[in-house]
Amino acid sequence: VGSARNELIVAIIEKTGGFLSTVGSSLIVSDIAKKVRNAKDTDPYQRIMLGISIFDILLSFLFYFLGTWMVPKETGWLWAVGNTPSCSAQGFFFSFGLFGEI
Image (cartoon, rainbow, N blue to C red; front, side, top):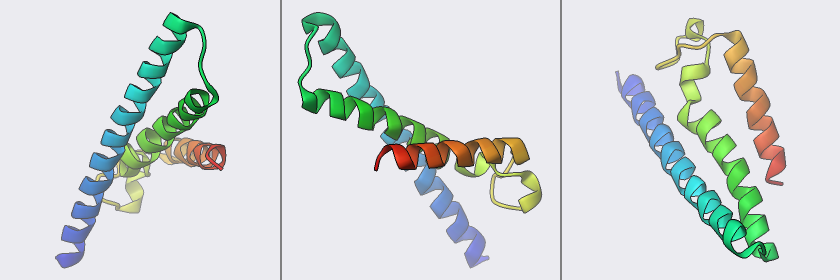
């Protein structure tokens, strides 16, 4: 019983953190996009933040927010409703996002 409770707590924290990170990075991308449209010039810091934020959106949304939803339901994980192709796609994008931030 304690294990299921801990699994639920971890899942809720991961999904909440992933959602908040996605929203925050989306706001950064939106802010930089407005500056680019208005000024037609960005400094290197803004371009670096834009790249990091785009990769963070991919990583946070596909891995942390969608998390267990994309895992095959046969695994028995909490809230697992996916299938093998969705799990493989999530793994691909996780690797892509992880290597993109290095």
